Structures are given as structure tokens and as C-alpha cells.
Image (cartoon, rainbow, N blue to C red):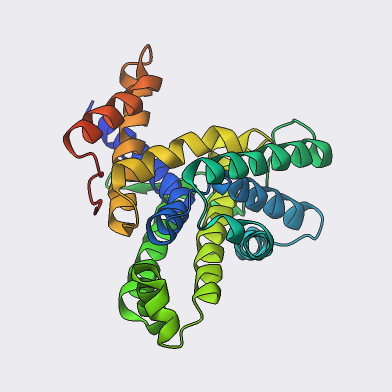
Length: 287
């Protein structure tokens, strides 16, 4: 029983780390830029399809397909941000929601036309298949890899936002754009870089998600719900909040489906309501 519980906790934490990589970009974008980007899930789907195309069509190995997914999602997001999204920064929340959800509909239709509605699969390298024995437990090698990637992303984001000149510029541009411009900062360029970073992380998460949850044209809608729950529970603009919120939700989701499958799918929604009832701004949210 103890070993089963440990494996469930491990699988839940791994799933939570996948949700973290998918969602932390939206937390950064929404929390720092005050822009409601519901197209975030579409960038995750884009990263997944780029990884599939890179591996099948170009013959790239899996580890090369991951940065390709990140860069492709970041590049497309810069194009959309410069031409479309920037016009909505000062618009109302309803306009942002309607426009970005429309982008998801368009992305879904394009993915269906290009790839069909079938689930996409990829071939992992041998060292990521199977399991590894740790302390007498058989743990999935790929899930260990996802956890390692999520921890690396966390460290890089915390260091980049808190310890670098770019992070200081981002915080200054968000806190007071007019004062930042007066000091000579290119606020529009900083926002574009921030948006690209968030979308690129979504693309990376989409590529990592293929082996765990699959990939089809509904990905942008289906996992947008999980992403929004993580951001709401963790708190806007908080990397630590997204990390702990994703871990908590992942463990709750997997444990609920394993131990109480009759209501397991609803536990994360109950958890969301309970946390927001006590802490309306999320675990690490700031007003």
C-alpha cells in the first residue's frame, strides 16, 4: 500500500510539473502584463505539432525537437503580439477574452486541416522509455525527465526575473510603463520578449505532453482549463505559486482518479473552489 501511494504521488507530481511548464508562461504574461491570453493553450498545441513535424519530417532527435518547439511558439507569438495582441493591451478584459479565444478556434481548425483529428505519437529515445528503480520503486524514466525539466525551468525563471537586468526591466515596465519609457526603456520590446517567453514555455510544455496525454486539435481547449486552474490557484505573476499550485493539482488529480475514480475528475475543481474561497488571490497571489 505504501509503495502504491508513493508511485501515485510521484506520478501526480510529474503530471503537476507538466502542468507547470504549460501554465507558468500564462502566469507570467497575465500577472506581469495584465493581458488575458486565452490563446496560451494554442501555443502549447503549436509546440506539440512542431515537435512531431521535426521528429517525423526532419528526423530530429527528441532532445532537439524540444528547443525547436520552444523557439517556434516564441517566434509565432512575437508575430501575433506585434500585429494583433498589442492592440488589445489597453482594451477591456472582455475584448481580450473574445479575441484570444477566437485565436484558439482558428488554431484548432488549422491543426485539424493539417494533421487530422487523430492522436499524434512520437518515438522517445531508449533511455527515456521504461522505468528506473529508485529506493525499491519502479519510476517512469520519462516522468523523471519531465520533473528535471520543470525544476530547470523554475530555476531559470526565478534567476532571470529576480537576478538579471532583463528581469529588472520587465518589472519596471510592468509597474509603471510611462516612467520606464521616460528612463529610456523600450517598453514595447520588453513586452514582446515577455510574451515570447511565456508562449515559448507553452510550446515546450506541449512538446513534453505528447507522450503523457497525447496531442490532437482539441489540445488548446482541453488543457487551457488545467492551465487556468493552475494560474488561479498559484496566483498571478508568481513562479513559485505556479510551481506549488501545479504540483498540488497534479497530485490531487492523479490520486483522485486512482483512489476514487467515480469522482476523481472533479476533485481539482473542488480544490480550486476551496482554495479560492480561503485565498481569493491564490496561494502566492499579490493584489
